[in-house]
Image 1: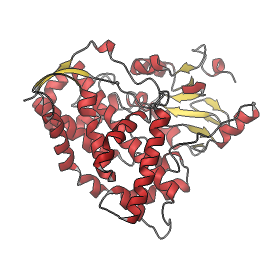
Image 2 (image 1 turned 30 degrees about the horizontal axis):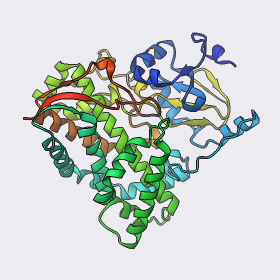
Image 3 (image 1 turned 30 degrees about the vertical axis):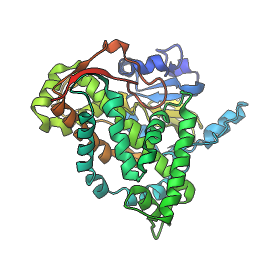
Image 4 (image 1 turned 135 degrees about the vertical axis):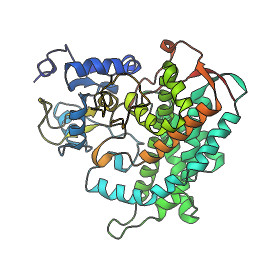
Length: 410
């Protein structure tokens, strides 16, 4: 069945390009009004389907025939005369791109090292990093908040959590910020740089373990699951870097930008900082930084939302679009930011077996970083027209490349 037959309201697939990403909430809203699933074209011309409705998104994220294994897709392309070439450097063997039973094993081993206790113990250090970054600002002026605050905070947290020495922090921050921007010329260099750095550090931790997450990953062992192999160690460490840095950088950026566009909400959070944990859930719902899921492939012919998906068909879930379609506890316009919304529902961290392992850390960082910023910086406003902001143009992340603001530190 052709794309026109699948979605008669369209003349062709939705093209997820830089123009689409810059205007993503409005464009996804128009798609949701037409249906919960649409044919789409992604980076490098990859074609598949994008799910934009909340209920169908939950179904897709847990569908037993939608897997991370790309073999059916490769076979379908090969039958059509195309060949998928595996990149020379990738994220390696890690749970984000694995299916059960391998996913179950990898996640259990990683979770044994990345414990809730380890995350909770980071709170005082996260707060100190936030204050240090604000202390480093001039008393008043103009700055790029992404460069001065949003990016270095999670980068420092994840670097210290993993046990990356100070002398590597500059390269680590740069590479972490580039690795998910798949269309950028720096992407492959950043991925190779992170891969080499982490592989070397893991070898060091094996010889001389310390009290950090890399050492814990090296040392974790389960009677049933054994240990992580060298390839799995590097892949898991890379996944934690990617998931623990760029998503939080842009969660902070999207949250601050939303507040600057809604001074009433900004004022409310300044007056009632106890609202921040719930407000973070609303930021995740309203404009999440992980705009869409990683790819899933149909292991067999299936039907999703009434649309036939052939074996090998690629399906991507628009997590941000699903958040604005999620049923909420109280009535209200889902397109409007409301930091008092009780129990904001969203799929920002995924759903099912691939639910984000680092969700508690992301929430912790966001609550502390935003609460500290609003308390320490009583005057904060955009220094450029909102329409002039440049958005990340490719990949699964949504956020601005820079956020120029005028400010005054208390």
